[in-house]
Image (cartoon, rainbow over all chains, first blue to last red; front, side, top):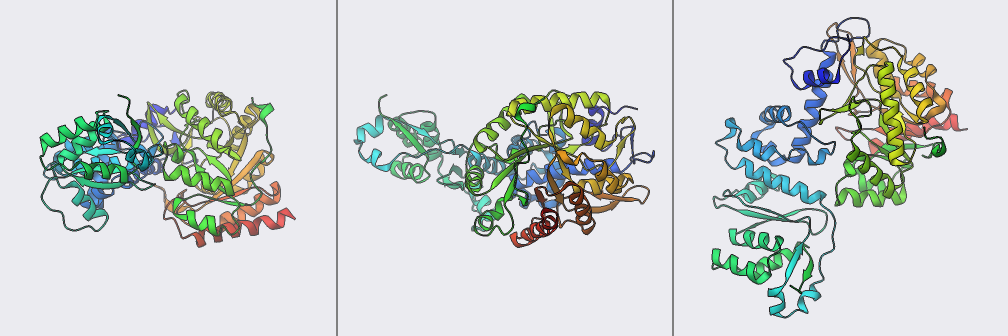
Length: 250
Length: 285
């Protein structure tokens, strides 16, 4: 009996299927639970990859529940690439639609934050602009310029206190409050930094990232929130080595 | 076949270890007997950040062996060209001393299963693997080493023994072989064959690197021993004995200690490397 990779693959991901015929213990007896070694390896290695990627989610739901969720997720979304450091891109959306965890509404955004941090960690290196270059510009020039952001920058919107929840679980931060938080992730060196920001600051950074002029992004943010503080928001991006070029000519 | 690019063993004939980022400072400051490092290719395919920066530093001080775990050479489908380009890119900038991959498959129907899955040893699979290795060696512009797997089961349809199969692949592609002595011990125990006879029939002149790692013990449905290639502990004494037997026949080879989960402190890993050095020194003389 010939075993195809299709048959092997299907039986691997679905433990309710029988072990493919044609596999033995080497002595002519059926392979039986020897096949489970491969089943376990696949499930355990992918679960561990997800646990590495989403440590705060794993901590919040507990190891047993996390294994159960991971088992369901990986059967539905097996990796499509051997680059396991990126595996789990669909996990936040999967959690969003996952009925048993529906009452923990903050989990999908928390997973988005963890995913953003991981993307930032592996993103390409770039050189931030020299502060002196910015200091040499007139206020009008600063306002009329567009700014290229580093590939390490991620902006997460949420209606949950996701920064607090993340920090409480991962960095022993203070107990989470109830106010919603948006987060800007920057990577000044090798470690991503998460900073909780207001909705206006998140929208401002997003507008800059999309190529809007600083002045227009400022107006947009002020319209959303009259307390928007431009120098604070700009300072956050500079400290995070998030601005890598300035285009004054447009 | 890649005759023109044939290179002899280019790793040092000394112990190396599988690199783990938590050991970075220890390795840079106090490598002990370790003269070379092996990395899993796929972990260094991100766009930037710490992993690549660490690798650049390490490669200035140590010979590097790139070990692929994701190409699926034994797969029924054509090799993933995108992944071949990534391997080429990594080899181009890093200029590793060695490149190796596995006699296994891991991708099917565009799903990557993150495990080294077994295949039957038939004429059909032989021809497919030869085709894949030719394509790989052409794509990365260098000769590769192919590693023997750990087996937990056997395919009834197999027409070749494993050593014969590997020998045939090596002859017809010009590739070298990576002999994992722990895998030999695990497979031999699991399939009830003699590990020594396996080594005796292995084409040892083609071996460019030896792997050692720890294994777990389990039993199958019939209560027979079932060893699992887990890389989560020290190399077993019986595997060290099998290594001595191997080195007695092959002469010195670069020896790698693999320890991939429940990762120990650097001193413990360095001690395993020291033990490999002790096994090498009598055959080196």
